[in-house]
Image 1 (cartoon, rainbow, N blue to C red):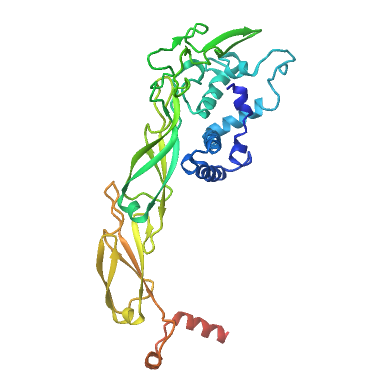
Image 2 (cartoon, one colour):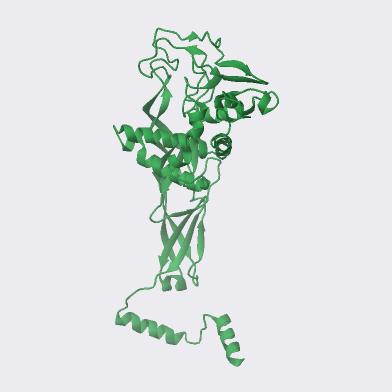
Length: 393
């Protein structure tokens, strides 16, 4: 596929967002579409698989701030008619790919100009697979992101979970060469194995991918039957992922080298696993600390008591002194989250008065007797003083 074709692709439309959408909006839309279109959720649905690849391709560009900026600039420069045949200085025969792939001259200096600026972007958008890159250069594989859901206790203590992925991988039949086993690709005679051909036009010298070998520097006379000469095919694999203790909700875990395969003997990309944690019905979390709210009665706070409270490892006894206020927080040391760096959080227990909804006559009589006995006690002296001052004024 030519650079012109990549520029003409509307990655924003693929993701269902506008070109001025925020990074958060783009990510939200991608994650929604990825869940809906994932091959595991649509077994045997070729249309869903194709859309899944298109959405992943689009997010690989506009989901990365730097590549998104380059993509927007490229579309601004080339997507509105500039540098089309006959559109530069009134001369005919000036091709878009000439500008896109030229090295030096137009871009200034010897840094490769627009070819280096945009070439990397669009080869990464294609996933970095073998058989498609310009110049036959080694390209690192694209990174892959997936999601996993674990429960609260697994997040605190760590867990090992299986993960099924459907993604491009090195072909097992040809081991990435693209050639049928027993045959060997030959060096392209047109470009001498470089993958680029150079030509001059007026004051400019241009390099562009060799059309005979599609920029790979190799000719495959007998393609691999399983990957059609690409060296990469889509397959489902199962990984065992270790979730470290103390992982937070929405945290990403990086697995180096588990992404898409690279081309030209380059390394594979990385796999990022985004972890979602199911809330616990009783415990909460604040950093390394676990939180727990314990309902108590008014007499327990007034007279003092010993509470038995749960932890993730069993139970502990908590001494509540007489005269404790509702809402007071007690700390149970070293019963929180133990992280890999050795830090251990605490269990923070908040006691709260539970007010009964209904009382029998005996309980009402007892409360009325208590109210009479404590009638001289003012539980809110500061507020009482302010009220009296307001009345006097």
